Length: 310
Image (cartoon, rainbow, N blue to C red; front, top):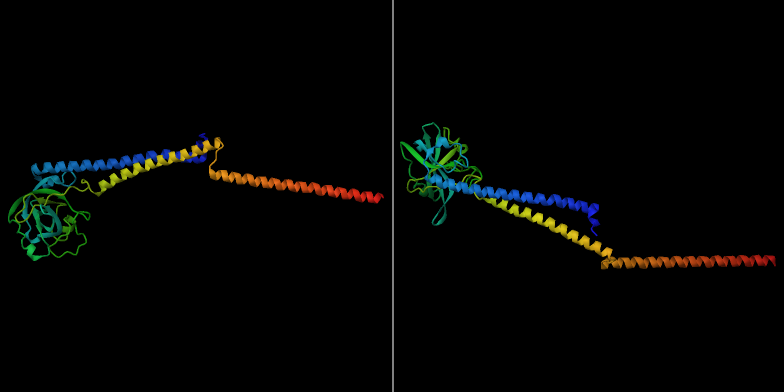
């Protein structure tokens, strides 16, 4: 009954199913592993952030370059603020008891004892960085030599939330906090990192550190979870279609073995039998007509022969 499984058609179906099902399961497991890795990394980052809030600050040079481990760590630096290059970073949101509010960062450059300058986000203010009424509230940076402490952050890029990478900002504003953005603004070297102060000078509000890139539960993490479901659904669909084709083929083979045919096939068979009967009848009629013609011809020949003898 199952000899159809040995046909070339079913060889192709079986090979496809044997290869497709493990492949779908492997890809689904891989995507699930990616999702779990992102969840674990996110949890580790949160744990590090909690420990960093209470850990002793370390010199910023010892924490560079910024990575997933050092991001958010408390860093310290000593130097003097460059009061001639205070910058505002517009269109930055901050969450508070009233929800998310639009405002701007106040960024100052700390000329350290090592020669390089460290971008320091001294705090956040609500309002518009282009409005004089709002910018008038910005306090001047401390004068003289100071020691600053804050959470270390990696340089921003075009994919960072709030970044305005298109340019076109007025003088005194900065769209992206990075060494590449500052290289044409200040005449000295800048660290490829920045810190956000833990204790902001009133009326500024401290900017909480952001999670390291690739460590949060972002859209990519949930895409991995969605792809996991899709691959497992594909594997189930292959199994479902194989059993459906197998069941239909097995039923057809069983019906053929019992002499049972579906209604459509039965009708075609009857029409074929009727056509064959008509052809047979016509053939027999033609054959009979031929015999009669031959008999008549022989009778005429005998009659002519008898007339000739007479």
